[in-house]
Image (cartoon, rainbow, N blue to C red; front, side, top):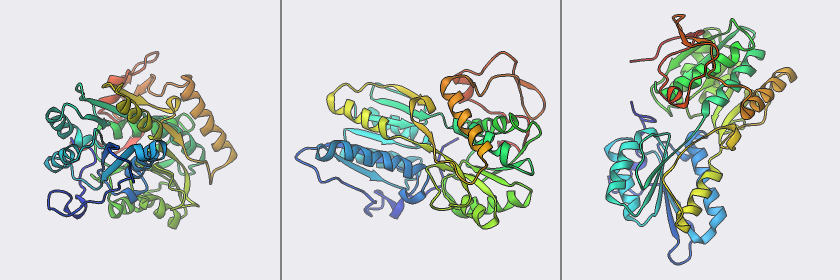
Length: 361
């Protein structure tokens, strides 16, 4: 199942001959070219925005020694393959492809351009000139769950899911585990929008979940629409990928912020120096790739508990997917005294006890 689908190439992108949105630094002669392909608009205030902040960090670090280019709102599939190839044809020596559905197209283009380095976000297929990188988003979901457990009066959280892949499922499970560590009777109601960025569907889903009794809203979608609904309806929620407090200052509790900057700067430096190697990176709190936005609109007890959860995850004191853990049917998925390894987490296809809803087939 593809990740971050259902978006249109802005202005029909490269394929229709209409110039895509790009940014080029004012470079010196022969600057090092770094390309980015985005699945959403840079103004989404979520996933793509966070990656573009990282792109700008490259420019700030290297100045006119680099020239960055991005193409936004690129549809996954054959279109993305042609856009990635175009970035390589235009002289970019390092290309970041920032959505799961770009994985196979990235591999195909990499075979045609062996001298170009490619980095694919959230994927698992590598080659000599293709690396993969990701963030342990689920760690932030557990912290959000702990906070929700302290704040929810109804004991019901609403969770807006994007597309049903393990990345999203593990976040839902981590959230309910965190919430139930505080309130063992807590419930999670979920809605799938089958999109990563669809403000209309996201906002409608938030309304539906609030109408079903949820007084805290979480999301694994990229727009600020759910938080804006929370602001209007007098409930609270969490931002996604970027700090969304400016969109809902009275509603956002915190946000799991994807901090790509150090990774992008380091990998660009390695590519420029000729020391770049194909690697697989999956970093969380302890790597600095995941941070929580400033805490707000919560009790001192909830804030203290959230910060303690952050610290315990970072230190290894808290292992999120450590048993005993049961699924919705009551079947034991993780026995007491054991913990899921990264492979089991990355392939998670079941929902934990306490979650109302199903994973679409």
